[in-house]
Image (cartoon, rainbow, N blue to C red; front, side, top):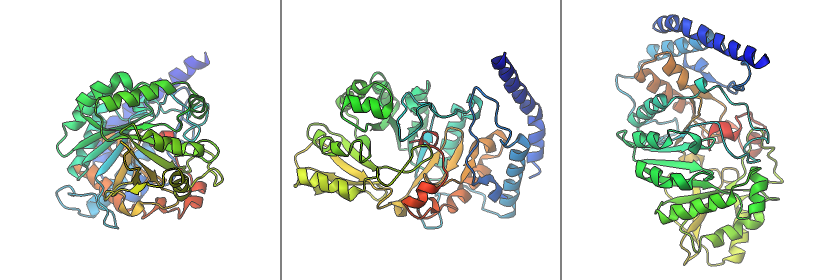
Amino acid sequence: MQQLASALSRRARRGAAFSTRAEWKRQVAEGPRLQDFLSNSRPRVHSSREDAPESAPSPDDSLQRIRRILTEIRQSPRGETAPAQLLDRFGRAHTYLRISLTERCNLRCRYCMPEEGVPLQPAEDLLTTSEILRLAKLFASSGVKRIRLTGGEPLLRRDLVELVTQLRAIPGIESVGVTTNAITLQKKLLALQQAGVDRLNVSLDTLKPDKFAHITRRQGFNRVMNSIVEAQTLGFSPLKINCVVQRHFNLDEIVDFVAFTEKHAVDVRFIEWMPFDSNRWNDETFVPFKEMMELIQAEFPSVEKLQDGANDTSKAFHVPGFKGQFGFITSMSEHFCGSCNRLRLTADGNLKVCLFGNTEVSLRDAMRYDIADKDIRDIVDVAVKRKKYALGGHGDMYGLSKAKNRPMILIGG
């Protein structure tokens, strides 16, 4: 009976929302201040099995924010054409968009989410395929050239292959990549490659099956390794392995990961552990890149530095004679914010201009209130111009550890 009552309650809420949609559209035309659309609080997240919390913003509140945004935009002329580039106050051009396709995941990695998982939003609160494509076209028209599909686990989205095909057909989009845990990747590799995926990142924190089961709280190590081998066979390049390093878990394996690049044409990237909600970050577990590098150089004294690209997040190295390479994503000890060109779109349609920032813009709501494409582009442009210079404005890793943000699973890897 309780489940039936909950289902009836959800149906009633949806019915009420649909009945007032025409009135919303009429009121939106009257015109919105952008500041109120940039929420500094964490987005509401509730279970698909429960009613929304009483503190969740009502449709009327969301409508009022939209109206204030349109009013501010109309009072501040921004020209008749979309911005050719999304530039922030520091001159950084944003050409790379990361889109989270789902909040769901088939693993429970300890640094990403709690063992019981996280409350999922109802399916109707997530971006539809048509909404993703609409936003991708808007970003492409403003200079975005690369898209990466993340999650959750993006391979859990049933229309992933078709979505990739449509994204690659958008004028201006030059590359579509996927970040995956590779549990179900092997059987989908060829289809993804044929659809246009040209960059593949695999999340793997250990080369030992027992430790894999510990960190992910699931089985599947052999499936991940088979996927990596198959991806090499199919010629995926770059093929990257993302490894989050924690002192008391896998610091002793970084030399093994570098040794793995001797026979495998992969790019192993050691990621400094970053603080997000639910991952219990502390500086005793954190390992700075210089400490990792000292361990590697002790084993491979001939290691050489490689040239980094203008917007690379990784400091790249290799051992001469090895097929692959390795690098470090030093978000905590030596941030690379000065050359950041990335934007993030969460599965529920919020734009995050910084991974570490807690200010978000709901592009989903803007679309569902029938806001014109030009106005949505202007909303994005203003949000980008308000981007902080580094680390979401939190100063350093200790400030980050105290800041409120989404769990990583709800941001998108």
